[in-house]
Image (cartoon, rainbow, N blue to C red; front, side):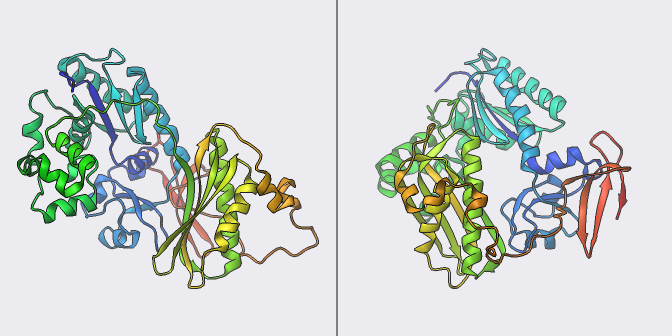
Length: 426
């Protein structure tokens, strides 16, 4: 491990919700909840004002509405969040060539590799400057943790939330880690945490007291050795600039179970096309097509098919997904569907078997059915989707965002990020 706290961990504060507050003056200082707004939606992010009422990420949206009925409930705008994330990541890369993004709003930075820090004082100054730069460029805040290892830097950023900076001085790691929950350690999820709890081990100090042999007996050789080293604050994991993408996937959860087999098939085709668009956007192709089906009783089935070579052909992926669906019983209803591609490569190769399975694979998509043939019945699309939180523009009133809609009306608040809170029009 290093002898200076030159690994930085940045975690943006309530990122989606804070981004919405920054772009909507009327929501600043108010409770904001971002996530799926349907009956089965879950909370993606809650602002700190909403967390006061007990709302938190991954909570069912219905429960959040009961806890905070007066909060603003918005649907996510991932393109908007990704644009802000790109600005933040650019600031991190200005500090060092070794930046390891974990998500849109979280990353590790090796300050030493970029010459941005070499001791505790220079690391603290780099962290202070970074927080100021992020605020100046994006208007958002984040928590910064600084330590001699990735595990400790992440722990420090947790303590720094919200909008703070915590630096762990080398030599103080064991005292800091000791009283913390075992769940603080990387690799300890709910199952491992429960297993350790049943053995009477709930804190990191208790892991050290139990000893390495006992950890190996409880968790196996590799996991036991690794966890014991982490408990002693030994973490040699480097900051890795590029993480290899292992798979690309998309999925949808439906507000009402889908019982019609034809509708299920159409949804799988639509998801396959979305997956391929994401695949091509990343400049990738893949050999293994994966179908995920969660049924009415919450049982989840996964089916996969490996092609002879990697592909990014939407027709090939659609056909493979359809074949996989044929092996799944959806009689009782489907609540979630997903399509993914793994075994990724940065080139494509014609899949002759896939083309042989359906010669129309090479035909343009709109020609797969003759114009005079009636298309399969599908739910009629809504005239317009007025999603709460999404931007709109009026010819005379200018820029605004949707507050809500229903009964043939839509309510819009007209304001911009730099304006005063705007007027509401229905």
